[in-house]
Amino acid sequence: LYGETPAGKLVASLFDVIDADGSGFMEAAEGRRFLCAAGCDVSEVDYYWEDIVRTADANHDGRISKEEFLAYILGDEELDASGSFVDKEREAELAGAMRALYGETPAGKLVASLFDVSDADGTGFMEAAEGRRFLCAAGCAVSEVDYYWEDIVRTAAANHDGRISKEEVLAYLLGDEELGAPGSSVAK
Image 1 (cartoon, rainbow, N blue to C red):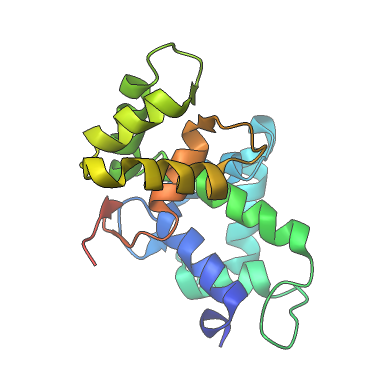
Image 2: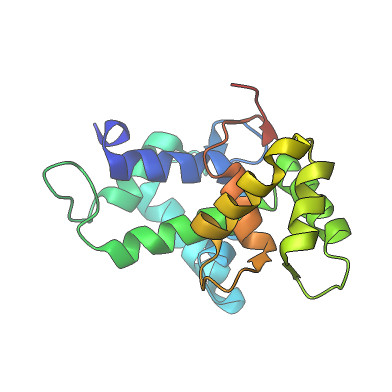
C-alpha cells in the first residue's frame, strides 16, 4: 500500500540506500548509520535503534524489512490525497538523510573520490572550471559539458552561488540512479 504512493517511493528509496549490503533488511550497523545521517545525536543512536527494533520489527528477528520500515516511517505521517507528505519539512528531512547516505555506497564513494580530485583548490566546492573538469573525467561528451554544468548549478546548488558541494553532486548524480546491491550503479 505505502510503496505505491510518492511518500512510500521516497521511503523505499531511502531504505534501499540504507541497506548497504543488499540483504533486503536493515541490520543494526545500517540502522545506526541511518540514524546518524538523519541527525540523531551519536550518544542516542543505540537507544533509537533499539526503539526502532522494538516498535517496527513485526517478526522479532532483530532486522527491519523494507515493509516494516515503510510502516514505521509512514505509519503516523499525514499524507495528502495523492499519497505525498503533508509535512514538507518531514519529507525534506528524509530526503536529506538519503542524500547523506549516498556517499556510503560504492557508487557514491566513486563519485565522491572524483569530486575530491576535481576540487583542485580544496574548498569543498566545485566552481565552474572544476565542475567542467569533473564532468569530462566522468565521461561527459565535451560538447555537452556546458549544458550539464549549467543543469547541475540550476537544479542542485542549494544557495544558487554557482558552487556545488560534494553532497549536491552526489544527490544530482545518484538521486535518480537505480542502485543495485550493494549500492553500486545499475545501468538503466
